[in-house]
Structures are given as structure tokens and as C-alpha cells.
Length: 135
Length: 294
Image (cartoon, rainbow over all chains, first blue to last red):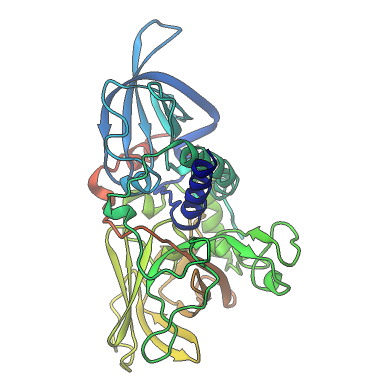
């Protein structure tokens, strides 16, 4: 246990010292509404592992209409995700996930993801998106 | 000085990001050690506990000059020193020995940017539009010196006759010639400008001219014009840090020269990977839709 904790702390220090890049190529406030936080649980239907942003699409049951809405969720770019521990196999189509983020201003089913939790393992993945950009 | 809500949001978001990131690291075993993008950096000085010694002396080139070779990203976290407030605008007082997070790029200039009236009006309008017209949104090439304070990686090399800077964003390059050549007689305007460098002791001094007619200096929309001369004074005080004092003399857009003092931090255990923005760009269409940015 002590060894595992030491390894975890050492890994954290190493990563914080070396690799915590996140990317944003656009103005967050122009596209997303910081006053519209979202938390969505659903099934991954499509993944675009692309620049300048990765997109994950998930089917979410709308509690009001009873319909299934397909949400597009914008994350960081592939380099940012890889540097923060993702691989293209971290999340698979058909997998259940919960995403926290911010909804688009235009009211469409578009969001900027901040983090994603995998239902199968409870693992939380940092989205590397513009909401967590430094600077 | 114009600091838009984008920058303000990003400043506040960093702390939240750090917390989420910590949770990731402590809960994830998926760090991609097998990927080039996370490949270990060689020749890193180490502390007794095996961690990188970021305060170790900077490496030197065979001729004794400091070596800037490395992979760099802007670092807003500074050591609070007695002279820091004279070089960087602090948003809160700091005590000597503390770490302090400073504003990004031009927003860090003490007293604000000395904008000409037209430039102030332009920046004000861009800020009111939430920077939706930012060329960076449309995957345009980044211009210097703005490249330095965007969150994309810069890799530097010393090669015979020049210092070479590569940036992941759109695979951009910049050449700073050290072979004694003068500026060209005609400088066709380019995003990086034309750069000549020389050593003054352990400080590398770069002079750059020949910028494009009007570009964005930062996300807030402050301008930089073809009248600008940029002088950079770069040092590597430690293994882990570059310091850049970037003086911009642009009489068309500013009433007097000003200096942006910034640090870059070395990024270890990662490698440069292309990042072509136009691959799957979706934001600009939304940003230019009717009513966008309001």
C-alpha cells in the first residue's frame, strides 16, 4: 500500500512537472455558456479522434420528452488527451459514460466536456478542453 | 489594457483543471507510456529521489553558450521576487519565496498596454464580440509573438547559423539567423517576421521586423502591425525555465514601447506531434452564425 501510494504521488509530481497540456483554439465564451453546466449520462455512439478537438457523441435519454438526444461533446485535441493519459481505446463505442461540462450558447445538443467518467470502472478522464486551459 | 472574459474564465478554470487532473492521475493507470507523445526525455538532471531537477543549471552548448534545446510551454506560475512587480502585473500581492500565478502574455504588462486610440477601440470591439473573429479560431497560422502565450508546444533547436523554433500548431516554424546576415532589403510581410539573433553574454537577443499589416497580439484582440520591431531577450536561468523579455515597439498601434516578461517551462517525457487545425474544424461555423458571440 505504501509503495502504491508512493508511486502514485511520484507519478503525480512527474506529470504535473512535465505534462499537463491542454488546448483550445477558440474563444470559450463565444461558443459556450458558463452558466449552463451539464451532466449527461449515456451511450457512446461515435468518436472523432481529430484536431483541433476530439468529439464524443453520446445518446442521452431526455427526461422531459422521453426521446433520445444525440449530444456532441467537444474535448481537447488528440495530443492533449494522449498526454493526459488517454488512448484511442480509453472509451469505446457502446460504452456508458457520464460527462460533465458546459452547454453551447445556441441551445443545440452540443457541449464542451470537462471530464468523463466511465460507468464500467468509475475511472475519470480529464477532457483537456478549453474549460481547463492554462493559459 | 483589454482583458476579455475568455482570459478571465481561463484564469479561474486552471485551478479546477488541476484538481480534476490530479484525480485522473491518481485513479488512472492508462498513461500512454508506449506512445511517442509520452516518450521519456533523455538527459534530464535528477534529484536524489529520481524526480527531474528543474532548478539544475541550464545545459550549455559546446561553445559555452546556454542551450535552449527543449520542448517549451508558457508558464504563468512565477517565483515571487522583489522585482517581479516591476516586470509583471500582479493581480494580488505576493511574498518573497511564494509562487504566484500571473496574467497571460500582454495582459501581464504593468500599467496595461499603451494603445493608440484606434487600437484601443478595436480591442474593445473585439472583446465585446468575445473574440469570435480571432483568426486562430479559423485555423489561421499563428503570428509571433502571440505563439508564445498560446497553449501549444514550441520546440527549440540550435543548428549551424540559426536558432530554430518549431510549433505543433499547424506545424509552424520560425528561423532566427545567427550567421551575421542583415535584414533583407524588402521584407515580404510574414506571420513570424524576419529575425536576427546574437548573444550578449548568456542572453540571446533577437530582433524581428517584417510582420504582417495587422494581426492579433492576444486572444483579447489587441493588435500588432507591420510597423512593429520586436526585441526578445531570452535566458535560461535553470534547466526547467526559459525567461523571455519581449519588447514591442509598434508606433502605429502603441504610444510607446512595452515589454512582456514571461517564463516558459520545459515539458518532459513527451515529443512533438503534428496538430493540423483544419483536420476537423467545427467551431468557426458556429462562431460566425447569426447571433454568435452575444
